[in-house]
Image 1 (cartoon, rainbow, N blue to C red):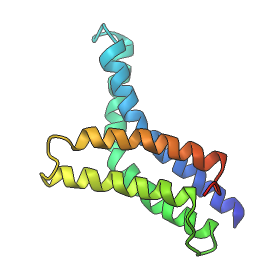
Image 2 (image 1 turned 120 degrees about the vertical axis):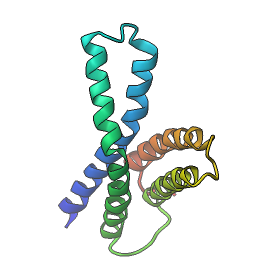
Image 3 (image 1 turned 180 degrees about the vertical axis):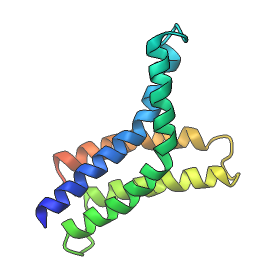
Image 4 (image 1 turned 90 degrees about the vertical axis):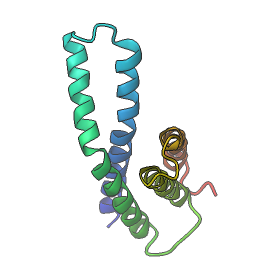
Length: 134
């Protein structure tokens, strides 16, 4: 079972990295690619298209696989744990996205979505370094 929990954790890292990479790839294209018709620019646009296409499904999988990973890792118990805080952050990010789509934060949701993304990177590092920090 421990091996399966590790596989789920690795999948979560992949899903989070996949979703966060969309922001970084867009920034690379916007600020560092000056020749927009170059081969590298076309490659980056292709990568952005793939990342955008699977961004939502990857986020949903992150939520589902994340809670499954935590449930199995903690033997069905609920503890205040760095993984739980990370998962709550992911849920919060999803809620910000949802509220933005229903016009509550229509013009500002993306900014908060990005801020939470940065917080998630920090929370992931903390979780990987010391899961029982709390």
